[in-house]
Length: 82
Image (tube, one colour):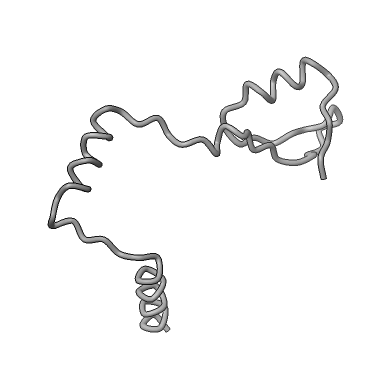
């Protein structure tokens, strides 16, 4: 369900939020939880991060696996843990 925020002050407070937070009514009742869209943004990467990724990609010893390989390994771990 969507709720339109028509109060400019409330809209500005929500737009400025950078982390998940509870929304409380004027009577102290918990109304819900707000998850800012900014939480879905990718983290800011530094030039050092990009350099490291480029080195990993270029390294012939870097081991690459498919999503199917990952899922197969997780199923194996799950079977062993029972």
